[in-house]
Amino acid sequence: MKQFKCRASQIGKLLSNDRSGKAMGETAKSYIKEWYISELTGKQKDIKSKYFERGNSMESKAIERVARYYDTALFKNEIQLEDEFFTGTYDAKTIDRIIDTKVPFNAFTFPFFDNQIDKDYYIQLQIYMHLTGLKKASLCYCLENGSDEQIDRLSWQIAKDLDKDEPSIEDWDLAEKELSYNHLPDNLRIKVFEFDYDETFIESAKQRVIEAREYLETIKIK
Image 1: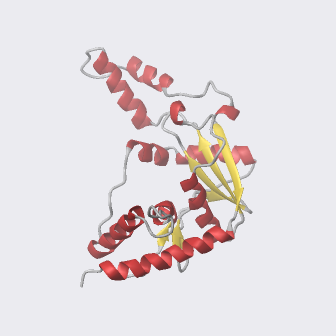
Image 2: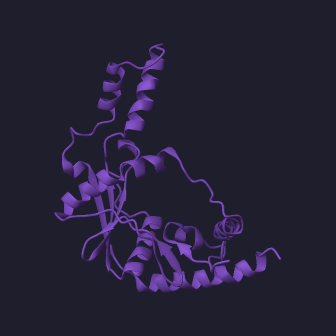
C-alpha cells in the first residue's frame, strides 16, 4: 500500500481538530479512513453532485474569463503534482500565479458580497503553490451561463409545469434565457481573491500528514 499523502482538495478535512483545538478531529479521522478504504478496495467514494458537475462542465469557459481578466493566455492543467506530503491538480497558472476557478450554480450562489476568502479554498491553493513553487494565487469565481444539461433540465421542468409531455423549442429558448448572464457587464461576472504563499501553514500541514500516517498504523486491518 502506498504512503498516505493528502489531496489538496481535502486538506481542510485533514486539518480539522477536536474540541481542544489541538488534536486531530473526527472529520480528519473519517477522511483518513476513507483514504484507507479506497486503497484497500481500489474503489473511489462518489462525490458527484449537480454543483460539482456544473463546475466541471463550465470550467473551460471560466478559464477563458480569467484569461481575459489577467490579459494573458491560460491553459487547463491536466497534470497531477505530488511531493512527499501532498498531491493536487491545479486548474491553470500564469508565470507567477496559481489560478483556481469556481463556477457557482447560479447568481444566488455567486459571492457578490463576500469580502473574506473561503478558508478551505485558501488552504487548497496554498498546497498548489507549494507543489509548483509559485508564491501567488488567485481564487476566481466566474458567473457562467447555464450548461446544456442545466438548460435541458429546466426546459423539461417548464414543460411539466405547463402539462406538456415534452419541452418545445420555445421552452428550451425560455430556459436558455433564464440561465443566461450575457446581459451583465464583465465586472459582475468575475470575482477574484488574490493572496500569497504561507510557508508557516505548509509546515503545519506537513506535520498533520505525519500524524495521519501514525493514526493509519492504529487502524490498519491485520
